[in-house]
Amino acid sequence: MAKPVVAIVGRPNVGKSTIFNRIVGSRISIVEDIPGVTRDRIYSSGEWLTHEFNIIDTGGIDIGDEPFLEQIRQQAEIAIDEADVIIFLTNGREGVTSADEEVAKILYKAKKPVVLAVNKIDNPEMREQIYDFYSLGFGEPFPISGSHGLGLGDLLDEAAKHFPKSGQKDYGDDVIKFSLIGRPNVGKSSLVNAILGEDRVIVSNIAGTTRDAIDSELKFNGDQYVIIDTAGMRKKGKVYETTEKYSVLRALRAIERSDVVLVVIDGEEGIIEQDKRIAGYAHEAGRAVVIVVNKWDAVEKDEKTMKAFEEQIREHFLFLDYAPIVFLSAKTKKRIHTLIPMINKACENHSLRVETSVLNDVIMDAVAMNPTPSDKGKRLRIYYVTQVAVKPPAFVVFVNDPELMHFSYLRFLENRIRDAFGFEGTPIRIFARERK
Ligand code: GDP
Ligand code: GDP
Image (cartoon, rainbow, N blue to C red; front, side, top):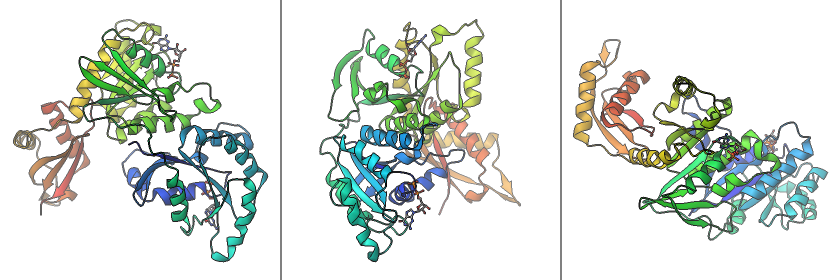
Protein backbone atom coordinates (compact mmCIF):
# COMPACT_ATOMS: atom_id res chain seq x y z
CA MET A 1 0.00 0.00 0.00
CA ALA A 2 1.22 3.51 -0.76
CA LYS A 3 2.01 5.43 2.41
CA PRO A 4 -0.61 7.77 3.86
CA VAL A 5 0.15 11.47 3.67
CA VAL A 6 -0.01 13.85 6.62
CA ALA A 7 0.14 17.60 6.09
CA ILE A 8 0.89 20.22 8.72
CA VAL A 9 -0.90 23.56 8.32
CA GLY A 10 -1.04 26.66 10.44
CA ARG A 11 -0.03 30.28 10.41
CA PRO A 12 3.66 31.24 10.50
CA ASN A 13 5.69 30.74 13.69
CA VAL A 14 3.41 28.24 15.38
CA GLY A 15 6.19 25.65 15.01
CA LYS A 16 5.34 23.73 11.82
CA SER A 17 8.89 23.17 10.67
CA THR A 18 10.01 22.32 14.21
CA ILE A 19 7.35 19.59 14.38
CA PHE A 20 8.13 18.43 10.84
CA ASN A 21 11.81 18.03 11.69
CA ARG A 22 11.00 16.22 14.92
CA ILE A 23 8.78 13.73 13.14
CA VAL A 24 11.11 13.25 10.22
CA GLY A 25 14.03 12.87 12.59
CA SER A 26 17.40 12.11 11.14
CA ARG A 27 16.27 11.20 7.65
CA ILE A 28 16.68 14.67 6.22
CA SER A 29 20.25 15.08 7.33
CA ILE A 30 21.11 11.73 5.78
CA VAL A 31 19.80 12.98 2.47
CA GLU A 32 21.76 16.17 2.80
CA ASP A 33 24.98 14.23 3.07
CA ILE A 34 24.81 13.64 -0.66
CA PRO A 35 27.08 16.33 -2.08
CA GLY A 36 25.60 19.02 -4.25
CA VAL A 37 22.03 18.45 -3.23
CA THR A 38 19.99 20.65 -0.97
CA ARG A 39 16.59 19.25 -0.33
CA ASP A 40 13.67 21.50 0.32
CA ARG A 41 12.47 20.63 3.74
CA ILE A 42 8.85 20.28 2.83
CA TYR A 43 8.30 16.59 2.18
CA SER A 44 9.75 13.50 3.78
CA SER A 45 8.85 10.20 5.28
CA GLY A 46 8.12 9.58 8.94
CA GLU A 47 7.44 6.63 11.20
CA TRP A 48 5.37 6.13 14.30
CA LEU A 49 5.13 2.70 15.91
CA THR A 50 4.10 0.42 13.06
CA HIS A 51 2.94 3.26 10.85
CA GLU A 52 4.91 4.62 7.95
CA PHE A 53 3.70 7.78 6.35
CA ASN A 54 4.80 10.81 4.39
CA ILE A 55 4.62 14.26 5.78
CA ILE A 56 4.34 17.71 4.20
CA ASP A 57 5.20 21.01 5.84
CA THR A 58 2.88 23.31 3.93
CA GLY A 59 4.55 26.28 5.60
CA GLY A 60 7.55 25.62 3.40
CA ILE A 61 5.51 26.22 0.26
CA ASP A 62 5.83 29.93 -0.36
CA ILE A 63 3.18 31.29 -2.65
CA GLY A 64 4.93 34.16 -4.44
CA ASP A 65 4.16 37.69 -3.28
CA GLU A 66 0.65 37.04 -2.07
CA PRO A 67 -0.41 38.75 1.17
CA PHE A 68 0.06 36.78 4.36
CA LEU A 69 -3.52 35.61 4.73
CA GLU A 70 -3.74 34.50 1.13
CA GLN A 71 -0.55 32.48 1.57
CA ILE A 72 -1.86 30.51 4.52
CA ARG A 73 -5.20 30.00 2.81
CA GLN A 74 -3.47 28.45 -0.17
CA GLN A 75 -1.27 26.32 2.04
CA ALA A 76 -4.43 24.99 3.68
CA GLU A 77 -5.87 24.23 0.23
CA ILE A 78 -2.74 22.30 -0.65
CA ALA A 79 -3.07 20.31 2.56
CA ILE A 80 -6.64 19.48 1.65
CA ASP A 81 -5.66 18.43 -1.86
CA GLU A 82 -2.59 16.42 -0.98
CA ALA A 83 -3.14 14.87 2.42
CA ASP A 84 -5.08 12.01 3.98
CA VAL A 85 -4.90 13.59 7.41
CA ILE A 86 -4.29 17.23 8.28
CA ILE A 87 -2.54 18.39 11.44
CA PHE A 88 -3.78 21.89 12.20
CA LEU A 89 -1.10 23.51 14.31
CA THR A 90 -1.65 26.46 16.63
CA ASN A 91 0.38 28.27 19.28
CA GLY A 92 -0.69 27.81 22.92
CA ARG A 93 1.33 30.81 24.03
CA GLU A 94 -0.64 33.22 21.88
CA GLY A 95 -4.14 31.73 22.08
CA VAL A 96 -6.58 31.62 19.19
CA THR A 97 -5.88 34.32 16.62
CA SER A 98 -7.91 35.54 13.67
CA ALA A 99 -5.45 33.86 11.32
CA ASP A 100 -6.16 30.53 13.07
CA GLU A 101 -9.84 31.17 12.49
CA GLU A 102 -9.20 31.78 8.79
CA VAL A 103 -7.38 28.47 8.49
CA ALA A 104 -10.19 26.76 10.38
CA LYS A 105 -12.79 28.14 7.96
CA ILE A 106 -10.99 26.57 5.01
CA LEU A 107 -10.48 23.27 6.79
CA TYR A 108 -14.20 23.01 7.66
CA LYS A 109 -14.91 22.63 3.97
CA ALA A 110 -12.43 19.77 3.61
CA LYS A 111 -13.72 16.26 3.63
CA LYS A 112 -10.46 15.21 5.22
CA PRO A 113 -9.84 14.44 8.88
CA VAL A 114 -8.28 17.29 10.84
CA VAL A 115 -6.38 16.84 14.10
CA LEU A 116 -5.92 20.02 16.10
CA ALA A 117 -2.61 20.48 17.91
CA VAL A 118 -1.65 23.25 20.31
CA ASN A 119 2.11 23.72 20.27
CA LYS A 120 4.54 25.33 22.71
CA ILE A 121 2.92 23.70 25.72
CA ASP A 122 6.35 23.13 27.17
CA ASN A 123 5.31 22.01 30.66
CA PRO A 124 2.24 20.49 32.34
CA GLU A 125 1.31 23.78 34.06
CA MET A 126 0.60 25.28 30.66
CA ARG A 127 -1.94 22.68 29.75
CA GLU A 128 -4.92 24.82 30.59
CA GLN A 129 -4.03 27.09 27.69
CA ILE A 130 -5.52 24.53 25.36
CA TYR A 131 -9.18 24.95 26.34
CA ASP A 132 -9.59 28.12 24.26
CA PHE A 133 -8.85 26.07 21.19
CA TYR A 134 -12.05 24.06 21.42
CA SER A 135 -13.63 27.16 19.91
CA LEU A 136 -11.98 26.33 16.59
CA GLY A 137 -14.45 23.50 16.18
CA PHE A 138 -12.16 20.53 15.66
CA GLY A 139 -12.84 18.76 18.92
CA GLU A 140 -10.17 17.93 21.44
CA PRO A 141 -6.95 19.90 21.01
CA PHE A 142 -3.72 17.94 21.52
CA PRO A 143 -1.14 19.76 23.64
CA ILE A 144 2.38 19.33 22.30
CA SER A 145 5.81 20.85 22.54
CA GLY A 146 7.91 20.73 19.41
CA SER A 147 11.03 21.97 21.14
CA HIS A 148 10.75 19.40 23.95
CA GLY A 149 9.25 16.60 21.87
CA LEU A 150 6.25 16.29 24.20
CA GLY A 151 2.83 14.97 23.19
CA LEU A 152 3.85 13.97 19.69
CA GLY A 153 3.08 10.31 20.35
CA ASP A 154 -0.54 11.01 21.26
CA LEU A 155 -0.87 13.35 18.30
CA LEU A 156 0.46 10.77 15.85
CA ASP A 157 -1.73 8.06 17.41
CA GLU A 158 -4.73 10.22 16.67
CA ALA A 159 -3.54 11.00 13.12
CA ALA A 160 -2.93 7.29 12.47
CA LYS A 161 -6.51 6.46 13.43
CA HIS A 162 -7.58 8.33 10.34
CA PHE A 163 -5.17 6.73 7.89
CA PRO A 164 -7.15 5.31 4.97
CA LYS A 165 -7.64 1.56 4.96
CA SER A 166 -7.41 1.43 1.22
CA GLY A 167 -5.36 4.07 -0.48
CA GLN A 168 -3.54 3.97 -3.75
CA LYS A 169 -2.79 0.45 -4.68
CA ASP A 170 0.61 -1.04 -5.03
CA TYR A 171 1.52 -2.80 -8.21
CA GLY A 172 3.38 -6.06 -8.66
CA ASP A 173 7.10 -6.24 -9.36
CA ASP A 174 6.41 -7.20 -12.95
CA VAL A 175 4.65 -3.90 -13.56
CA ILE A 176 6.89 -1.06 -14.73
CA LYS A 177 6.00 2.12 -12.92
CA PHE A 178 6.98 5.41 -14.47
CA SER A 179 6.16 9.06 -14.03
CA LEU A 180 6.67 12.32 -15.89
CA ILE A 181 8.06 15.16 -13.88
CA GLY A 182 8.90 18.73 -14.77
CA ARG A 183 7.75 22.22 -14.11
CA PRO A 184 4.28 23.35 -15.19
CA ASN A 185 3.58 23.68 -18.92
CA VAL A 186 6.45 21.62 -20.27
CA GLY A 187 3.81 19.25 -21.66
CA LYS A 188 3.54 16.40 -19.15
CA SER A 189 -0.21 15.94 -19.54
CA SER A 190 0.05 16.18 -23.33
CA LEU A 191 2.75 13.50 -23.27
CA VAL A 192 0.65 11.18 -21.14
CA ASN A 193 -2.21 11.57 -23.58
CA ALA A 194 0.12 10.95 -26.51
CA ILE A 195 1.47 7.77 -24.91
CA LEU A 196 -1.99 6.49 -24.05
CA GLY A 197 -3.14 7.30 -27.56
CA GLU A 198 -0.44 5.30 -29.28
CA ASP A 199 -1.52 2.58 -31.68
CA ARG A 200 -0.16 -0.46 -29.92
CA VAL A 201 -0.81 0.76 -26.41
CA ILE A 202 -3.80 -0.84 -24.71
CA VAL A 203 -5.14 1.26 -21.90
CA SER A 204 -6.40 -1.35 -19.51
CA ASN A 205 -7.71 0.78 -16.75
CA ILE A 206 -7.84 4.34 -15.58
CA ALA A 207 -8.04 3.39 -11.96
CA GLY A 208 -10.07 5.84 -9.94
CA THR A 209 -9.82 5.74 -6.19
CA THR A 210 -11.28 7.94 -3.53
CA ARG A 211 -7.91 9.61 -3.50
CA ASP A 212 -7.29 12.33 -6.00
CA ALA A 213 -4.20 10.68 -7.36
CA ILE A 214 -5.09 8.49 -10.30
CA ASP A 215 -2.69 6.23 -12.14
CA SER A 216 -3.06 5.07 -15.73
CA GLU A 217 -2.48 1.40 -16.41
CA LEU A 218 -1.49 0.25 -19.85
CA LYS A 219 -0.15 -2.69 -21.79
CA PHE A 220 2.38 -2.70 -24.60
CA ASN A 221 3.77 -5.82 -26.28
CA GLY A 222 2.33 -7.89 -23.48
CA ASP A 223 4.14 -5.92 -20.77
CA GLN A 224 2.30 -4.00 -18.10
CA TYR A 225 2.97 -0.39 -17.17
CA VAL A 226 1.57 2.21 -14.86
CA ILE A 227 1.93 5.94 -15.34
CA ILE A 228 2.07 7.24 -11.81
CA ASP A 229 -0.04 10.14 -10.65
CA THR A 230 -1.49 11.12 -13.99
CA ALA A 231 -4.48 12.82 -12.46
CA GLY A 232 -2.40 14.82 -10.04
CA MET A 233 -0.63 16.13 -13.07
CA ARG A 234 -3.91 17.01 -14.66
CA LYS A 235 -4.95 18.96 -11.62
CA LYS A 236 -4.97 22.26 -13.39
CA GLY A 237 -6.22 25.69 -12.65
CA LYS A 238 -5.38 25.75 -8.96
CA VAL A 239 -3.96 29.09 -7.95
CA TYR A 240 -0.86 27.47 -6.52
CA GLU A 241 -0.28 25.08 -9.42
CA THR A 242 2.59 27.10 -10.84
CA THR A 243 4.46 27.78 -7.61
CA GLU A 244 7.82 26.12 -7.64
CA LYS A 245 7.64 24.34 -4.29
CA TYR A 246 4.31 22.83 -5.25
CA SER A 247 5.75 21.36 -8.45
CA VAL A 248 8.61 20.01 -6.41
CA LEU A 249 6.19 18.42 -3.98
CA ARG A 250 4.25 16.78 -6.80
CA ALA A 251 7.48 15.58 -8.40
CA LEU A 252 8.77 14.10 -5.14
CA ARG A 253 5.52 12.21 -4.62
CA ALA A 254 5.56 10.79 -8.13
CA ILE A 255 9.26 9.88 -8.03
CA GLU A 256 8.77 7.97 -4.82
CA ARG A 257 6.38 5.53 -6.47
CA SER A 258 8.25 5.14 -9.77
CA ASP A 259 10.88 2.83 -11.20
CA VAL A 260 11.65 5.13 -14.09
CA VAL A 261 11.28 8.89 -14.13
CA LEU A 262 10.91 10.88 -17.34
CA VAL A 263 12.34 14.33 -16.73
CA VAL A 264 10.49 16.56 -19.15
CA ILE A 265 12.07 19.74 -20.51
CA ASP A 266 10.47 22.33 -22.77
CA GLY A 267 12.58 22.36 -25.95
CA GLU A 268 11.11 25.67 -26.96
CA GLU A 269 11.94 27.49 -23.73
CA GLY A 270 15.17 25.69 -22.91
CA ILE A 271 16.59 24.69 -19.55
CA ILE A 272 16.04 26.78 -16.44
CA GLU A 273 17.21 26.41 -12.87
CA GLN A 274 13.94 24.80 -11.78
CA ASP A 275 14.41 21.97 -14.28
CA LYS A 276 17.75 21.16 -12.70
CA ARG A 277 16.34 21.01 -9.22
CA ILE A 278 13.49 18.74 -10.23
CA ALA A 279 15.86 16.44 -12.13
CA GLY A 280 18.14 16.38 -9.09
CA TYR A 281 15.41 14.78 -7.02
CA ALA A 282 15.03 11.86 -9.43
CA HIS A 283 18.76 11.25 -9.38
CA GLU A 284 18.96 11.53 -5.62
CA ALA A 285 16.11 9.07 -5.17
CA GLY A 286 18.08 6.52 -7.18
CA ARG A 287 15.47 6.07 -9.88
CA ALA A 288 16.16 5.30 -13.52
CA VAL A 289 15.96 8.48 -15.58
CA VAL A 290 15.18 9.36 -19.19
CA ILE A 291 15.43 12.99 -20.27
CA VAL A 292 12.61 14.02 -22.58
CA VAL A 293 12.89 17.21 -24.61
CA ASN A 294 9.32 18.01 -25.61
CA LYS A 295 7.88 20.57 -28.07
CA TRP A 296 10.68 19.80 -30.54
CA ASP A 297 8.17 20.66 -33.30
CA ALA A 298 8.19 24.27 -32.16
CA VAL A 299 11.96 24.65 -32.32
CA GLU A 300 13.52 26.24 -35.35
CA LYS A 301 16.32 23.88 -36.19
CA ASP A 302 19.03 22.81 -38.55
CA GLU A 303 21.25 19.74 -38.45
CA LYS A 304 23.27 21.16 -35.53
CA THR A 305 20.42 22.11 -33.21
CA MET A 306 19.87 18.76 -31.57
CA LYS A 307 23.54 18.23 -30.87
CA ALA A 308 23.85 21.72 -29.38
CA PHE A 309 20.83 21.17 -27.14
CA GLU A 310 22.21 17.85 -26.03
CA GLU A 311 25.49 19.51 -25.06
CA GLN A 312 23.57 22.08 -23.06
CA ILE A 313 21.71 19.35 -21.21
CA ARG A 314 24.94 17.51 -20.42
CA GLU A 315 26.46 20.73 -19.14
CA HIS A 316 23.50 21.62 -16.92
CA PHE A 317 22.69 18.12 -15.70
CA LEU A 318 26.19 16.88 -14.93
CA PHE A 319 24.90 14.38 -12.41
CA LEU A 320 22.57 12.80 -15.00
CA ASP A 321 25.27 11.81 -17.48
CA TYR A 322 23.83 8.27 -17.61
CA ALA A 323 20.37 9.38 -18.70
CA PRO A 324 19.47 8.93 -22.37
CA ILE A 325 17.91 11.95 -24.08
CA VAL A 326 15.01 11.88 -26.51
CA PHE A 327 13.74 14.80 -28.57
CA LEU A 328 10.07 14.54 -29.38
CA SER A 329 6.75 16.26 -29.69
CA ALA A 330 3.55 15.43 -27.87
CA LYS A 331 1.78 17.60 -30.41
CA THR A 332 2.92 15.96 -33.66
CA LYS A 333 3.59 12.59 -31.95
CA LYS A 334 7.04 12.50 -33.49
CA ARG A 335 9.23 9.87 -31.74
CA ILE A 336 6.57 9.23 -29.07
CA HIS A 337 6.86 5.54 -29.98
CA THR A 338 10.49 5.49 -28.82
CA LEU A 339 9.54 6.26 -25.21
CA ILE A 340 8.31 2.88 -24.03
CA PRO A 341 11.32 1.00 -25.42
CA MET A 342 13.57 3.53 -23.65
CA ILE A 343 11.65 3.06 -20.41
CA ASN A 344 12.09 -0.72 -20.76
CA LYS A 345 15.80 -0.41 -21.29
CA ALA A 346 16.31 1.96 -18.37
CA CYS A 347 14.23 -0.28 -16.13
CA GLU A 348 16.17 -3.36 -17.15
CA ASN A 349 19.47 -1.66 -16.35
CA HIS A 350 18.10 -0.35 -13.08
CA SER A 351 17.65 -3.90 -11.83
CA LEU A 352 20.63 -5.44 -13.61
CA ARG A 353 22.89 -7.74 -11.60
CA VAL A 354 26.31 -8.50 -12.99
CA GLU A 355 28.30 -11.59 -12.35
CA THR A 356 30.89 -11.18 -9.60
CA SER A 357 33.74 -12.84 -11.46
CA VAL A 358 33.23 -10.73 -14.58
CA LEU A 359 32.90 -7.63 -12.43
CA ASN A 360 36.22 -8.36 -10.74
CA ASP A 361 37.95 -8.97 -14.07
CA VAL A 362 36.76 -5.54 -15.19
CA ILE A 363 38.00 -3.87 -12.01
CA MET A 364 41.39 -5.61 -12.07
CA ASP A 365 41.89 -4.57 -15.71
CA ALA A 366 40.97 -1.02 -14.72
CA VAL A 367 43.49 -1.02 -11.88
CA ALA A 368 46.20 -2.36 -14.19
CA MET A 369 45.48 0.49 -16.60
CA ASN A 370 45.24 3.27 -14.03
CA PRO A 371 47.11 2.52 -10.79
CA THR A 372 45.36 3.18 -7.50
CA PRO A 373 46.16 6.42 -5.65
CA SER A 374 48.54 6.54 -2.72
CA ASP A 375 49.07 8.89 0.17
CA LYS A 376 52.26 9.35 2.25
CA GLY A 377 53.76 6.24 0.80
CA LYS A 378 50.69 4.11 1.43
CA ARG A 379 48.97 2.78 -1.66
CA LEU A 380 45.29 1.93 -1.96
CA ARG A 381 44.80 -1.79 -2.50
CA ILE A 382 41.64 -3.15 -4.00
CA TYR A 383 40.87 -6.74 -2.98
CA TYR A 384 37.59 -7.34 -4.70
CA VAL A 385 34.28 -5.75 -5.69
CA THR A 386 30.80 -7.03 -5.19
CA GLN A 387 27.37 -5.86 -6.25
CA VAL A 388 25.24 -5.47 -3.15
CA ALA A 389 21.97 -4.10 -4.50
CA VAL A 390 19.80 -3.30 -7.49
CA LYS A 391 17.33 -0.47 -8.11
CA PRO A 392 19.75 1.23 -8.33
CA PRO A 393 22.75 -1.05 -8.75
CA ALA A 394 25.17 -0.60 -5.85
CA PHE A 395 28.74 -1.85 -5.55
CA VAL A 396 31.10 -2.21 -2.64
CA VAL A 397 34.84 -2.07 -3.29
CA PHE A 398 36.78 -3.85 -0.54
CA VAL A 399 40.09 -2.13 0.12
CA ASN A 400 42.93 -1.93 2.62
CA ASP A 401 42.06 1.63 3.71
CA PRO A 402 38.95 3.54 2.51
CA GLU A 403 40.66 6.85 3.38
CA LEU A 404 42.95 6.30 0.42
CA MET A 405 40.05 6.05 -2.01
CA HIS A 406 39.57 9.35 -3.82
CA PHE A 407 36.23 10.43 -5.20
CA SER A 408 37.85 10.68 -8.63
CA TYR A 409 39.11 7.11 -8.48
CA LEU A 410 35.65 5.83 -7.53
CA ARG A 411 34.32 7.79 -10.44
CA PHE A 412 36.90 6.15 -12.70
CA LEU A 413 35.83 2.70 -11.49
CA GLU A 414 32.19 3.59 -12.01
CA ASN A 415 32.97 4.58 -15.60
CA ARG A 416 34.80 1.31 -16.23
CA ILE A 417 31.77 -0.58 -14.89
CA ARG A 418 29.52 1.44 -17.16
CA ASP A 419 31.75 0.81 -20.17
CA ALA A 420 31.68 -2.91 -19.49
CA PHE A 421 28.03 -3.47 -18.59
CA GLY A 422 26.06 -0.55 -19.99
CA PHE A 423 23.78 0.63 -17.21
CA GLU A 424 22.42 3.38 -19.42
CA GLY A 425 19.54 5.18 -17.75
CA THR A 426 20.34 4.21 -14.19
CA PRO A 427 22.42 5.81 -11.46
CA ILE A 428 25.04 3.59 -9.83
CA ARG A 429 26.14 3.76 -6.23
CA ILE A 430 29.70 2.76 -5.42
CA PHE A 431 31.35 2.69 -2.00
CA ALA A 432 34.75 1.73 -0.58
CA ARG A 433 34.85 -0.43 2.53
CA GLU A 434 37.71 -1.79 4.54
CA ARG A 435 38.17 -5.52 4.26
CA LYS A 436 38.15 -6.90 7.78
P1 GDP B 1 6.71 27.68 11.51
O1 GDP B 1 6.82 29.05 10.93
O2 GDP B 1 5.27 27.36 11.85
O3 GDP B 1 7.34 26.60 10.70
O4 GDP B 1 7.44 27.72 12.94
P2 GDP B 1 8.92 27.26 13.36
O5 GDP B 1 9.00 25.79 13.46
O6 GDP B 1 9.89 27.96 12.50
O7 GDP B 1 8.96 27.81 14.84
C1 GDP B 1 8.79 29.19 15.14
C2 GDP B 1 9.47 29.51 16.47
O8 GDP B 1 8.82 28.83 17.53
C3 GDP B 1 10.91 29.07 16.53
O9 GDP B 1 11.65 30.06 17.19
C4 GDP B 1 10.88 27.78 17.33
O10 GDP B 1 12.07 27.56 18.03
C5 GDP B 1 9.74 28.07 18.29
N1 GDP B 1 9.08 26.82 18.77
C6 GDP B 1 8.68 25.78 18.01
N2 GDP B 1 8.13 24.82 18.78
C7 GDP B 1 8.18 25.28 20.07
C8 GDP B 1 7.77 24.75 21.33
O11 GDP B 1 7.24 23.64 21.45
N3 GDP B 1 7.96 25.53 22.42
C9 GDP B 1 8.54 26.75 22.33
N4 GDP B 1 8.70 27.43 23.47
N5 GDP B 1 8.96 27.28 21.17
C10 GDP B 1 8.78 26.57 20.05
P1 GDP C 1 1.98 20.25 -18.20
O1 GDP C 1 1.60 21.42 -17.34
O2 GDP C 1 3.43 19.93 -18.08
O3 GDP C 1 1.09 19.06 -18.01
O4 GDP C 1 1.80 20.75 -19.72
P2 GDP C 1 0.58 20.56 -20.74
O5 GDP C 1 0.54 19.18 -21.28
O6 GDP C 1 -0.66 21.10 -20.12
O7 GDP C 1 1.06 21.50 -21.93
C1 GDP C 1 1.30 22.88 -21.74
C2 GDP C 1 1.13 23.61 -23.06
O8 GDP C 1 2.11 23.19 -23.98
C3 GDP C 1 -0.22 23.36 -23.73
O9 GDP C 1 -0.66 24.56 -24.30
C4 GDP C 1 0.11 22.32 -24.79
O10 GDP C 1 -0.76 22.40 -25.89
C5 GDP C 1 1.53 22.72 -25.19
N1 GDP C 1 2.28 21.57 -25.69
C6 GDP C 1 2.42 20.37 -25.09
N2 GDP C 1 3.21 19.55 -25.82
C7 GDP C 1 3.56 20.24 -26.93
C8 GDP C 1 4.38 19.93 -28.07
O11 GDP C 1 4.93 18.83 -28.25
N3 GDP C 1 4.55 20.94 -28.99
C9 GDP C 1 3.96 22.15 -28.84
N4 GDP C 1 4.20 23.05 -29.79
N5 GDP C 1 3.20 22.47 -27.79
C10 GDP C 1 2.99 21.53 -26.84
